[in-house]
Length: 318
Image (cartoon, rainbow, N blue to C red):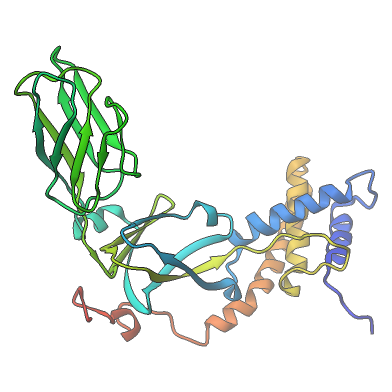
């Protein structure tokens, strides 16, 4: 009996047979590889989420940094989901920014920093609501001609805007020095500052929103954050015809799915309709292994112990 080898050669040959393009003059090997990778990396994860692709994503949190962009991982992972942990402690997970902000309010506090003396500067002052979240500080005033002036911090301790170089802020102490405006400030004209204050500690909650992870409180030291994630399939590197998909069961689903993309680009709707039932069967068979694995444990609900702990009645048991 011949051995079934679900490698790239098998997939490519099947695509050529299904699409009726046996010759490289009809569709090149390079084009087939492009179609395969497009389907494998971007389409297949949306058709099926395979159990074995669920893994633990981890990162190290930096002290006093509460926001972490994850744009670099968008093409690596298709989804992030609870549970999530800080050094092994489960924390609350949010996707709705309104709910997160209602629970952990991040309001700007405004105070008077200084008063105009008839010169452009320098002006010094102190903001008492510390520590200050970077890139949230705003200083503002009105010049002698009645024009509004303002400047914002750039996240590196320096103000930019209607101020000259040398205008700095200390995020930890709130000390602000060297504020020199681009115009003269009238005598007695108030100079205001507003900024977000944060608290330090072990994070108790995380918001996943706008391709960022937001933590509250801000880390007071380095912590290991981990969360469940579904990894996207790895594209074919095509080192040779013997290259295999991550799971051999994917071979037919990849072949039929790739064929559908070829039919789409050629507006061959009749062939598309005839082929789709075979693709639907192949993708369901490819998912059977994951479904069988998932069936060994009941679906988690809010009534299960694993969903209640550690947030009994909304309060952390720590």
